[in-house]
Length: 249
Ligand code: PGA
Image (tube, rainbow, N blue to C red; front, side):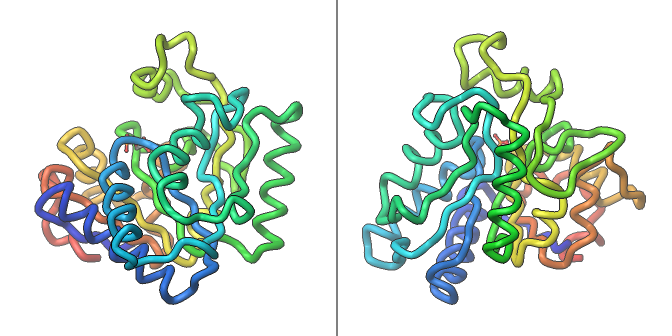
């Protein structure tokens, strides 16, 4: 796991956008998983600006899911698919035939996770995945638990995650209690995994990551240390409690 600290959210978003554009230039048909959340919104604005200036071509990029709420169809305003569509996909020249997202509204969610995991396997795995990190130390929707999953799977959302994500819904009772999520091995085996973290509310996670020397399923973010393909782009506020000798390692 590599960590680079940037002055602020703007600088880390610019750096993330440059990395994404570089990866697309190297492999125009790469398989990429873009996240939801507040952190990547500025990155998406920068990617859209780059597209409008002719600096990046998304026409061959294959888009896959990080996660999705169980029970929400792709046109539901709180679905992963809808978020991604309005913040990025519909604003650039992504080809709809290259966008294949996991179906949150599938009749059999378990079977849908297995189908999607198999599909990604047949496609050769994820080239580039981006994700945030939860204040409760989750990665993707891999919540702290006694056991974690390898590939796409059903995840019961913790009360904490439902509470935090309630800001996107009318009320907490509307937040689904299950999600389909990328698994830990999907993240660690991706050719490049960019972790984005901004703000003081994440500082405790980075303090723990820089000071604790154990890996645990109760601390899913600690498993990021298993891969050298994990590149964490974090701002000064997120890094404010970190042990300074760990930055860059
Ligand atoms: P955020 O979400 O970007 O809204 O902080 C990150 C996460 O919970 O994984």
